[in-house]
Amino acid sequence: MAQQLPVPPLDDRRIPAKITLVAAWTSFMFLYAYVDILGFYTPGIVQDILDGKVYEFDLSQTFSVSALTLVAVPIFMIVLSATLPARANRITNLVVAGLYVPATVFNVAGGNWLFFYGLGVVLELILLAVIVRSAWTWPRTKPSATGVTLTTGPDRAPEATAHL
Image (tube, rainbow, N blue to C red):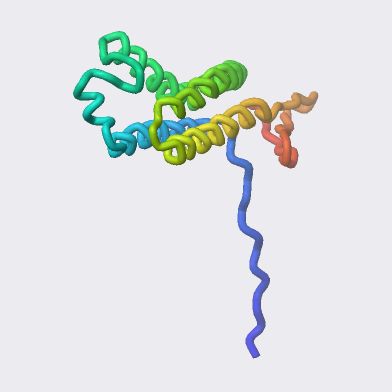
């Protein structure tokens, strides 16, 4: 009979807050785009667009600039989440995600297919909740007299890093 060797546990280190935020904003953008793209398959939508209407709005330069702005902000949040310093990053993510909650909920009003648009909105709200939670619970560092910093956070064991 062969002896079984113990299997070491899987490595499950915490993902840095910046990476979580970048991933969540990227996922949000995919959902945001695909709900709109798949919405073109809703009967009458393309004809309404050809007739110059989106939901209750006339197609115009103002509408297009507004729509571009609504989509550009989360796109820039992907880059900002990767590059801003922690404090500015945290505040920016909390503010922007908070502002996108009502904007996201409003999107269900324009859909004829309530289950489709409702599912899209629920999934987007889940990602916004992940963003708010990740920004809100951003791990903090505790400086020590030895020059070693302990990084702590929810569900995180202290991790020592030396400042050289």
